[in-house]
Image 1 (cartoon, each protein chain N blue to C red):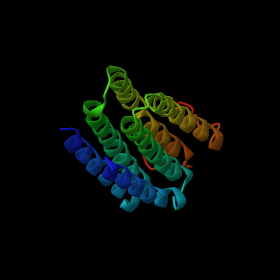
Image 2: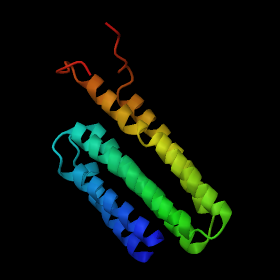
Image 3: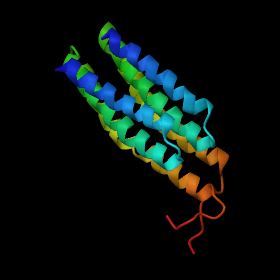
Length: 86
Length: 94
């Protein structure tokens, strides 16, 4: 399964293009979520290869943390973005 | 079986990354990233379930699949709503 991790490294490097050159902050957050999904996959690959099951726990927590982190960033950049109903 | 699923999932992720790079608008990028990212990740994890040695690792991988199906479509929805609310006058009511 070495080829799969190398392909994942290539995809992460390609996603960093949008992270560095997004016009708005939401493009950067979008690219960051793509990269974090690939990081989760990378942790699972290492867990399967080295037979370490606690990497899977880390990946599980990281899935939920990336979700909370996106909400935190959106709230940080636009704290009063709730639109009033007309 | 495992290698086939991993290869299919990596191909789907590759299309998602390609669409995220070359598409011109943020909504098109959200479209590409959401569908391809979630589906490709889950396909790769299903391939890893067949390769996992013990039942505990398989159960944890299935739990990660459930979490990704849960939070994967929510994140671009939050980003899209925040982007639309960030515009001063949106062109049409979303």
